[in-house]
Amino acid sequence: MDDRYSRQEAFFGIGKEGQKKLKESRVAVIGLGALGSVTANNLARAGVGFLRLIDRDYVELSNLQRQSLYTEKDAAEALPKAVAAYEHLKQINSRIQMETVITDVNSSNIDSLIEDVDLIMDATDNFEVRMLINEACHHHQKTWIYGGALGASGMTMNFIPGEDKPCLCCLMGTGLSAPGSEPTCATAGVLNTTTNIIASLQCTEALKILTGSDAARTRLLVIDLWENSFDLISAVKDPQCPVCGKGEYEYYGKLRGIQTTSLCGRDSVQVVPEHTANIDFASFAAKLENLGKVSRNAYTLDFDNGQFQIKLFKNGRAIIKHVTDEKRAKSIYSEYIGL
Image 1 (cartoon, rainbow, N blue to C red):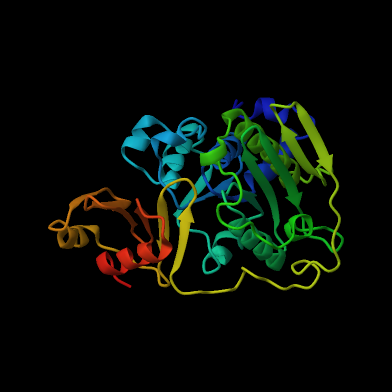
Image 2 (cartoon, rainbow, N blue to C red):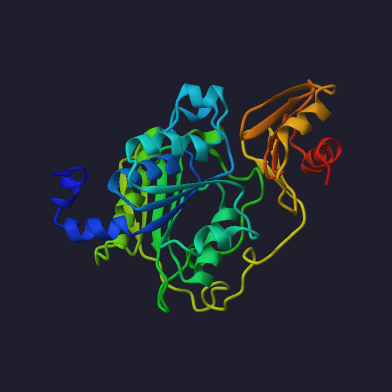
């Protein structure tokens, strides 16, 4: 007798029929950090049939305080989070299908990441990507679950397509805060209990949605664990919302050239070229070895000239370390990798 999911099937809200629906479900997890590693772990253990594991980053020692899937060995090897998550999850549940995607989520690739899944789990660390997810999900009429955490506080909400349903833009508007004006995990810190709770709340809602339950939450849930507060806030559709009211997109479908993004609290800038590459690390390492220290694994190539460091991914995306100016990062990329 197979009893892997017996405790879950015994729960009145799931049952054998609900478990069958989970097996047939497809979910994209965007971001595999503190929220995403818990989310991927929970959904894999719950028996969701297909998980697309999406993250642009690699494991570092500072992640281990809250990113529960990873180990010191992952950090020492600087494994991409999508790869490390996959390697651990396949040992937890070998029966489900998983796909790893090591990429920066942007307007040029989001269609391919979400169009064939039933649900999108937001575990990202910036609102620009969330706004893109919101617009793309509105365009494709996809359900997604928002989650965010900082310090001891967090919030989460389900966004379900419907003429009378609000979107993220209805709730928070379109304006993004100016860089440096808001606290971050690096400056304000974050408790692993906060990220675990928010991700678990997201996953519970995912189980409801994927099994067709009518118990899915319709309000924004805001928590503060330090102050012991749990609040539900109603959100209503704004008829004048640029996204779900007028169908006007600021992020979705806006293809641009080379993109640079300062990585908050990391003293680094990410550079994403306009065109995807497939870099031969062996030959590329030979070009750089006379200019500084070069090391590589199957997923990334690292270059260090004593002033800055470059972590280069196969598709041409790079993280330039010890640089905060985006123009300087672009210049370094152009000089050492080429545009």
